[in-house]
Structures are given as C-alpha cells and as structure tokens.
Length: 273
Image (cartoon, rainbow, N blue to C red; front, side):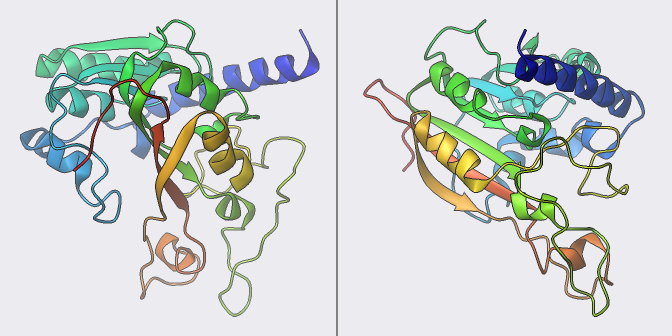
C-alpha cells in the first residue's frame, strides 16, 4: 500500500467512526426527514434547494437514483417516497441504519450499500438515471477518484446533482476580526486535513475535512465526462445576524456550492423541459 493509499484508508476509517458518533447522538445532519416532508416528497426535494431553478424532472417514478454519501434517513427515503428506485451509499453503518429504520417505518424499499463514495465498483456501468450527492467531498483527501466513479455508473444523459462546501468558506475563519469581517486563514494546498474547527453549522465535529479547489471540483466533474449545466450558491445570508453568526458570515462568503451536471453520451437519459 502506498503512502497515499494508507492516508486515504486512515481518513475513511476516521470519518466512518466520526459519522457513526454523529448518527447515534442525533446530530443535526443525522436526523431523518420529518413527517411533513413525506406528504409531498418531490416538493420537498425541489423546494428552494437550487434557488428556484428546476433541476429535477417532473416525476421520479421508475428512475434509478443513487443517493451518494447520503445516509441519515432523509434523502434516500424521500426519493423513494417520490417513486424512484433508490440505492443509498454511505461510509457510516450508523447513518445507513437510520435509512433502514425509516424505510421500515414508511414501508419503503431501499438498497443500502456501505462503501466509500469513490468506490462504486459494485454497481454496473450506466445503471443510474440520477445521482444525488449532498455535501461530502470535503471528507476525502483527494477527489480525483470520485467523479470518474460517479460518471461510470451514470447513464448517458443522466443527471448528477451535487453540493460541496465552498473552498473559500473552508479556508476562512469562523470568528470575525475587528470590524466584523472574516479572514482567510487556511491555505488552499494544505498538506493534510483542516485543524479541528469550532462547533458550528460550518464544520462537523470529529471529522477530517479537506479543502478542494474549484479546479478539482468543477474541473474534475467536467474531466470525468459530465457537462455542467448550472451552478448555484445557496443564499444563507441574514442581514440582522450578529458578527460570528452563520447568517452574518454568509453575507461575506457563501458556504456551499451546488452543481447540476449531465453525463455526456448518446444513451437515453433524463430530459428536463
């Protein structure tokens, strides 16, 4: 095993344990979807997440959907409730257990697979119409493997919807300096994970997180065989939040980046109106 492979394996094991802890302690990002979301699952999935843009098709019925690094009892069950055939991949057994519990309670069918987001060899090429990838690339030391892995399992013309922690946000401190502004304190090319951050909506305690450049994220998606159709920075700014609050910081630097991409190729895929 090379040094890079050993580092990757250590990071994956560390983050799997961290997310197991977050899931078993009821952390905010490890809470199943609320009852109200299941009354209109497609409406919940499309409601404002892309700033009013229409990224999902009119119906998900019968589509093969991969919810990638998306355990926790939310994304997979809601896509399944909307009519899709859903596979959930997650590194954390405890996060997948939450999906299993929700699926049992809601009588929803889910395929649950415990593996890393960049290790999708168990799936046939071109299997999925839609890959949904919530914030998680920051937990990999290198994203060079993940986008080709996703491209391989996505049908030609299929959609890839992903969200990432904005690199500039991960580089920027959470505590404002005098005058209420924020400073970049972490280099883009840091040799290892970020130092542990203060408990906040911006960092998950106990995890190893890495900054990835826009070239690695957006360029990596394109180089893997996707055409990017839209990019959106969700607006979390709150005008009257005090300095140091999440909404105040978001006025200076958007914390997240959402990307809509389509797999290139001639095979039939999803068509949006």
